[in-house]
Structure formats: C-alpha cells, structure tokens
Amino acid sequence: MEHPLNAPDVDPFEFAKRAADAIREKSQIETHDIALTLGSGWAKAADLIGETVSEIPASEIPGFVKPAVVGHVGTIRSILLPSGKHALVIGARTHFYENHGVRAVVHSVRTAAAAGAKTMVLTNGAGGIKPEWQGGAAVLISDHINLTASSPLEGATFIDLTNLYSKRLRELAREVDPSLDEGVYVQFRGPHYETPAEVQMAKTMGGHIVGMSTALEAIAARQAGMEILGMSLITNLAAGIQQTPLSHQEVIDAGKQAEERISALLAQIVAKL
Image (cartoon, one colour):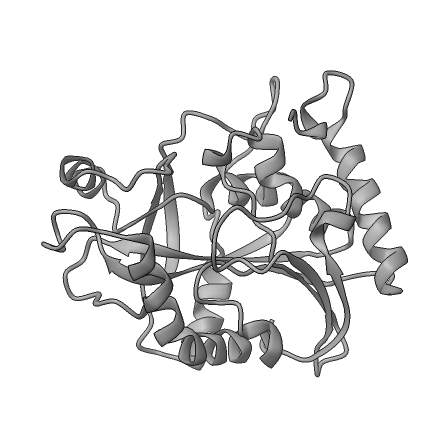
C-alpha cells in the first residue's frame, strides 16, 4: 500500500501541519517545546522526564504508521516537564528500509516542528566501531555520514549542515555526565547489518557508529530550524569489530539491560534543555 505522503499532489509540510493539528486536538496541548524520538533502548525515558498528559496511538495521527520494529512502542506522548514546558515523545519511527519513502521517514520530525518544537532529540540503538565501546555505552553524536543515497530535501533546497548536531547541547549533556564520549554516526540503508568490509569503509571515512536511522531525520530537523541533540546506545560492536554474528535479539537484549541507566541519563539531560 502506497504511503499517503507519496501521492504526487501532497505537500509534506502541509501534511505535517495536519498531523500537528491532530496532536493538538487529541492532547489539548497547544504548543510542544521539545521533541524526542526514542529508539531502541531509550523508551523508558518517557516515563522519567515528567508527567504524561496525553498518549495517542500513532496510527490515529495523519502520516504515521505502526512501527515495523520490535522495541518501538507506536505511540505519541505529550509530557509536562518540571520546567513547565511540554515534550512530544515520538515512539513511532519509520525507517528508510521500510520502503515508505524518505518523506515518511522524516514526517515525525516535521510534525514535531509544526507542533512548535524548537529542540529535537534523536536517539537510536547502533553498532560501535571503537572497541572500547562495549555494549551498553551511551554516546553523543557529533556529526554524521549519510550513506542512504537519499535526502529529505526536495528540489533546489540547499541547507547548511555545519554543526548539525548542536555543540551547545552536547556540552549540556556532559554537564550531566562528563564521561560521555562522542562520535560520527554513519547511516546505512539496511535492513541487513553492515558487512565487516562496510564497517571498515565507514571507519576509514571517519565514522565511529553505524546504524539505520537518524541522519535523514537530522537533516529534516535542520531544515525546520530545530536545534538537534543526537545520542546512540551502542548495543553491540559492529561486524568485524565484534567477532560473533550480529542479531536483532542482541540489540533488544542490550537495550533492555541498559534502558534504566540510559533513560535516567536522558531524563537528566532533558531537564536542562
């Protein structure tokens, strides 16, 4: 079934506005200040950052589909933060490998921007290239390399991606945990895991983290004028760095083992935003 965002007469920004209006109507919250996309292992942060005032099945909001990945919750939550701000927590990420098109991948980010969010927090579970990052490490994203051969930008739309992942927000994160390391995230298309040779290519290109999300969303967030914080949970060492075969179950297990610790960390960071 063709995703509605891919119809030739659809304006993706108008569609995002419709989705944001639906969230306003269902949540009764006029403006959300911060948005978070919670990837594998990060979901519990939604329970820790504040008081949930609304929880909406993502399928009730235009343009959102039920997540295809085990470990993603499929809801959109409005949370009142202790600061009085409201956070929009997106538990319904669409991955590029689902073949719904890049508009669908970044629809959540554009919806968050249309809902008023000025800060976008993008999290994921990913593979680590640095051997010292054992499974369970939380790492800040300092930059990315987009290997999807696609972009959310359409036509002659030229957006500067210098300092895409906010240095200011990374410094705020390190006020919570000074030991946080950082690295360059490399988005592959997926859904297959990277080969050892592809991991070595990513390493040679300057990458430290490999995954299947985030980069396209970050570009769309920059286009929308948002300030971006990116964080990866290193669920495993990447192929060839880790000598045992990779599995999605390993990703889920690592996320479960780390979720209380990293969710508490993220909640403390959000409190500073």
